[in-house]
Length: 285
Image (cartoon, one colour):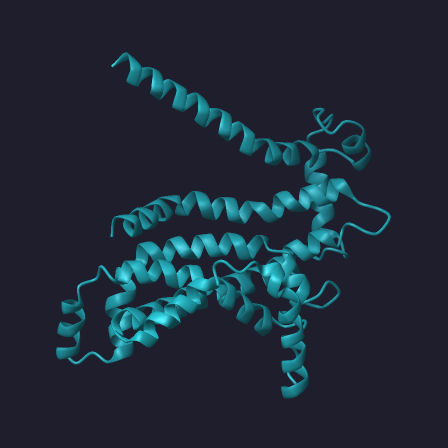
């Protein structure tokens, strides 16, 4: 009993240390967001002399023409919400069909999707840009500076993991439920949206949050597809726009980072129970 008690104490100490290590970067950002640029450069670890300077920096962010915060915030919401919704629904459909279609082709198609999980984005980013430019020239479609292109690319990169998780969960769903629904007159679309999708809710919410955090904070893919100087900019692009070639406004950059991170933190806090439930359900089943 004493040994178990000692192990529990050691685990709690280790957990507290890990929490401290992970919180240090965010704590430094909060600490320096209430300073001006000179104070950040001269004493980055020191306490701010005037905490109210943070709200002054926030006001400056809202009125800064280089960042255009509210427009960038709306763009991030549109791109993130449409991307995660499409990833969730389309990946669920694909996984359901692959599980219920018992052929060798379905197996190899599933393997092709899974292979997308191990290919680094840096390997395909230049061919991706060339492909988008080719599509733009051939079909006279505006790819850069548009929502459609970046959303389609996010669907492509988010689908492999989502299909993998949905696939494992759907295999545990008794097929008798679907056969009974078909006998009652359900079409394929009604069967998926009214029967299967509600059962997938734990995994669905988990993937929405995980993909949402990734897409909301992503910088590399939007800068390749949308570009830095277009009319459409996400929050990471807007924050990067505050860093010029010779001058970096560290006080505004750190304040903008805090404002950009708050929606994701709030979303995670409200959805953490669903995330844990979804991960546990998938592991058990």
